[in-house]
Image (cartoon, rainbow, N blue to C red; front, top):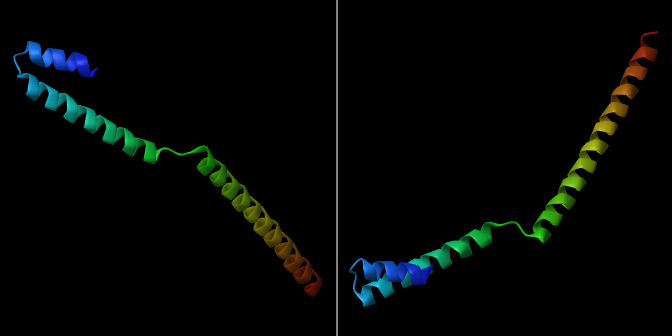
Length: 84
């Protein structure tokens, strides 16, 4: 890509040193943006940790729900015995 851009700038009448600086600047900008994009991408290890955390959270939610259900059933049984 850089050679094509360089040739296009030369054909458009841009001086060689200016064309080279433009191409180098563009290449540096692309390299910097690619580096930023790589930092924002999720890695397999990160996704594995995330899945593990979600599985643990899901297990905690199930435990709390079951505990709450048993507590409600216990309270209802106690109330029904108290009022009969």
